[in-house]
Length: 470
Image (cartoon, rainbow, N blue to C red; front, side, top):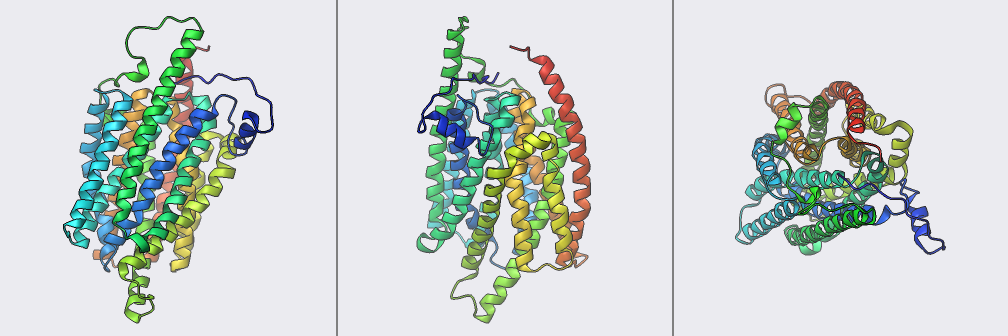
């Protein structure tokens, strides 16, 4: 069971802990004794997102080098969805054999080894387009997997009531990491080149492993001290948090629980919408970049440089919006309308944004609509998705969440790629027509959100009955 936070006595003094808590309460309802663990977790996810955003523009720059690249980008989501079936099964088996600290260590270091392989392939002269395809598939898997694993870990450390208050602060670390990562990437691409960003990313992931193990050891030590202080006898051997999860696959857990299934379907639908939106912005930006190169107005930059710079700037804008929303709105949204109400914010924004694009898709308009959508996704939606799992079992926090945040994400992307294929190959749809498709899909999204809100209340009631009041 996650640790139940104890209220520590306040310590007076303008420069002491009271000042820290007064500052943190500007952004989240953090109570005495809760800051150290929350800040360590915020630092952990900050570094994860920093590392990811350092190499995210590399993905775009390597792939979006010709006019057919946006379609290729959409089609590769289907490949990722298939691969996620095997990734989730392997992860579930490993989670049932090793404790969480070993699980996080092994999976993250495996990712670091992959980064080194890509760097070596670059040094051996692998063609840019081929590298772009392979790297796109790989980073799409790593991105969702490593973040899902982190939030499973965070969910394992908190009760439902405490997690709802603390998660906005932890998620701020993710938002801040995305902001810094996208901006630093934009600065570094010209002086060091896109491939050297991989080395920095790998080093950051190693630091994340060390930090996660420290958080785990700190949590286990705190729980043992609390039990000893309460006069409880310690059972021999490792605690529940140091043991592997019970056997069972993530997909079985999802399909066996209506609450989890609704979440999975929602994730699929809204990633269909997001992937279609990414096709829209990729298509528009590629067209504009090609015209700039052909007309000689690119300032001496190549297609790779132009696309890398545009996507770094676009991602930075989305992350700045996410930072503002995360800092000043997410905690208050949770307080005002709860976790269920927070689910409805992103679909409403997407409905208005794609409705606007359907009347004319200029680069500036698409950039701002997608940036606002992504900003809300990275702040309100990400925090809400994580909080939904506070009322689930340990197995569901790790295995089911990994399945939902990987396979069902890419499943939605794969359906979007099918829509792109049909629209470009047989229907010759204009970009504005894809925006209309998204408007229709948002309607299904809103229905699923309503079903999730209903099941969340029922799931919470069951969880409350299962845990005796202290």
